[in-house]
Length: 69
View 1 (spheres, rainbow, N blue to C red):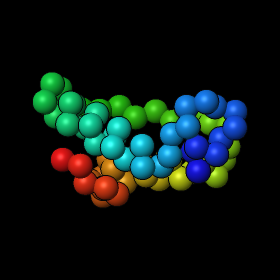
View 2 (view 1 turned 120 degrees about the vertical axis):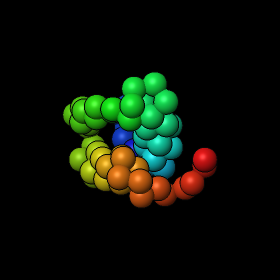
View 3 (view 1 turned 90 degrees about the horizontal axis):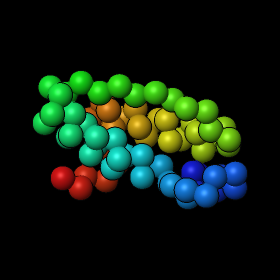
View 4 (view 1 turned 90 degrees about the vertical axis):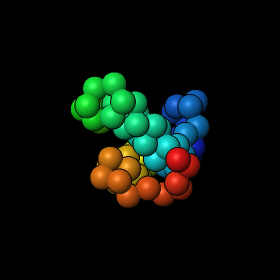
């Protein structure tokens, strides 16, 4: 998981990418007509990167893990 990535000290988990993506989508809906650019930046631990990218993509598609809103 993302928190298991020993190279980074951020300690995010895949669920973090879910709520961050949803929050950014809400902001983009409000301020820029829903336009949102998503860029995949490297990553040091391939398994973690894959999990987080999948969660992020699903959140962009509206498939939420943990509804907060």
